[in-house]
Image (cartoon, rainbow, N blue to C red; front, side):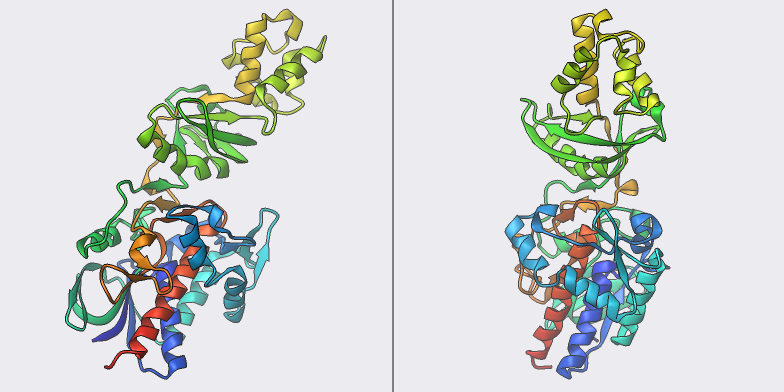
Length: 418
């Protein structure tokens, strides 16, 4: 018999378990708390995050940094455990964070193991029993709580926190089982559950794939089929052998996929000169009398990219603007300012950093993260329909929602007769 069973011992699950244990101790309520996870080694997502350094959070986190459920609902949860609380929590564990120019906060050790080891130690100190590898296969309501079936047996718990993650990076254990459990308990899951923060593919042989390894600042713009600018992200952009990656690409990926659901003609454009549109580029070319167009572009772009752009536009880089036909010159300017991207898809959940979609926040009580459908069930982290942009925002959602779920689960127990 458990008092609180946390299903999933990733970022949100560990945080929920820690705060459940701390809450029980603070209230003087003996509580048996266990966190179940199917992984042999816990914290795979934490260890790979931020290139192995773990981007714990961002210096400034707002509801506008997220997509999925409504902004007011996301804001309400984030306010319960913000960046200041996160920094203080990790400092208490001996993990000092540093702020980088991008606004991201990393451990000063630049080692994700520092973060994971601190969380695991905090969980044990809080009296949490970490059970792994022990994959939860089903959760069923029963009188007074829940029956939890795992690969090794059955357990009974008075309260359950579902924090299994979504479907991103399935080798870490986030393979969608939590969404299936939630649906089996009567929760609605969004119609579309898709990879978020994922690289995008271009057709084999596309000229951008020939630039594999090139990284430049660029802006990606998503437009509707009618040409309306929907969303854009400007940041470092990486050309690869399969297409595009880098922060700007990862951030826009879920928006591109979701837009195509309702508008198959929605399209992506890439500006190699962020903030400078095709008309301004064309004007600069015209005004650069006597200079080759390649020389003009090299003032903004690396030589390798200039050559590729000129070749794709069928323009001689050594030719002056006056030597080019007007439509050819404008075509080059358009390509520089708004290269059309014939995206064929993304690299899937295996390469995604997050999941878009899940259980809507409208199905939980935001003050407690308790289900409106199944009393006694709390939800936290990526299993919910909330996904943030790159930069530590998804971790901050895990910390905030895990805190609310864990503390609320124990508070509810304290108010119940045993």
